[in-house]
Image (cartoon, rainbow, N blue to C red; front, side):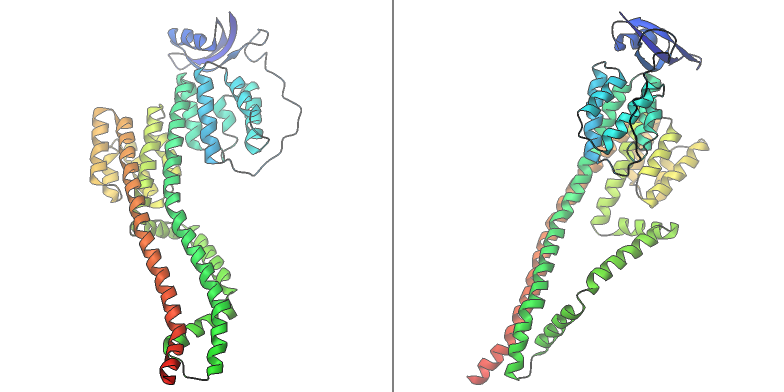
Length: 412
């Protein structure tokens, strides 16, 4: 039998710190729950004594501030593996050490080492995670905190892992739909740039030697080619300037709202943005509620993470509605962003007490809609790009050969 130090919350909300004997950590948790206690922290004692007496000393190594971001794929893998280790009954410190040791030296490994040190020093897992908000966002920390309070951290981590995986698949689906058209546009721009700067000047010399009047299309093509050769350096300047201007506008409250409204109103693409954002809203809120996070706190987390000002403002109105004792569905319907069917399903979820399940079902349906829209966008863009490229090349060929045909007809 091993001795475990624990911190738990009693039936009356009072905190309790003590030790308990059990074969494994999972058995210790079960014993505590049978006594009406909710364990928030538990670990195997290192030599007995009071809670915190066996805290390991921190490693004497340097720790630096780092600015690198952890990728979404790394977070998904980490959460999946941590959920598996917790489900197997390993203490959280040992689980973190195992995951950190198997990583290559990078930003994430250093952050995990620091989190491990903090937990060994007496902090809760969620408190240690809060020091790295760029890696562990409010959603992650809130769910971990709920898991600690309820003594179901393994279940919460698995739920969080599923959420992250579905969110990543949706994002990759949307991003993947844009790769092909962007690649085609870039290649087409390079080809047209080569034609304008290398091929057309040779034809221009030939036309000058012919000393004949040129058709209007040929004159327009030569003028455009000369402009490209003379002012090509303005293209990156204009592109960078436009990007900087949009970013500057987006930093203002009115500008951010205007841009986000434009995203939602764009043909096809706007529907993809709207449905993917609503899917993220429903899945995030459903996961938080299912994990035991209070509804107002969950809505505040979702509002910050949703990524669109229009929908964020609608969620803010929902928070005000709930504070006044009203429902979620009514302000969502009044916003004009959410479909009536979605609003009705949320209303039913509230009435039946299964709002979390209903939100997850809505999210699954919206994910399917996004898949269909992305496929439709890909099917629409492909022929449009082909027609556009064909039209540009066709105009160049006709404009270049019109003078030659005119000369041939004259000679004939």
